[in-house]
Length: 276
Image (cartoon, rainbow, N blue to C red; front, side, top):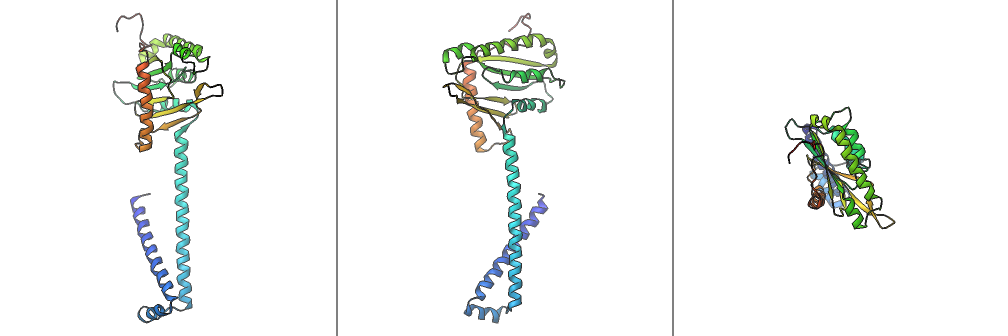
């Protein structure tokens, strides 16, 4: 709504509310014998036709107000529904699409995305397809945090198959990077895998621009922790108290994971080249 339209609407609302209050007050006072005599003598006298006209005008104003209120409520509902649908994600591919859609700044430093995962079995197929897609992503740094297979075995809180799955996925990522190392180096793509050793209740994705997709763990029927089925999006532009608290919650778990993570060298670096 433009500023002119907002100003016009405010003026119209004040005028109609004022007229309605004055008219309503007059009609109420006109029903009382002493005040009716004063009104008829010093203000003006209303006959039956005038009273009917005033009531009709007030009824019309009320109908218009109710219609506008309903229209505002419907517009607010549509905005809230859109916000909810944008902020609740059920498909990882929608999150990976953010990588494709993220505008890349014209600067030397790469864009970065951190993935706080478990075995990476769900996200890696999506990321590998993005890296090798026709979009030709350039100048990106991808940091993948995954559970250490040894910690999975020691913890005893995860499904038993996660140990082999985590080990297998890390080997698959290393094989993929080794196969595409030259092309990724040419495009400025780096991938790091950092195994960590703690029970992270929160998992998700953190983009360099502050956008976060976070989810939580739940207890399964066999008394093991497993990922929940949705991700909640924290917009980089939303600095409400709610989003700030969720953002700090995610960051606190990320800091915990980083303290226990094993620093892994950049997988895209050629191991035959000497250096740190």
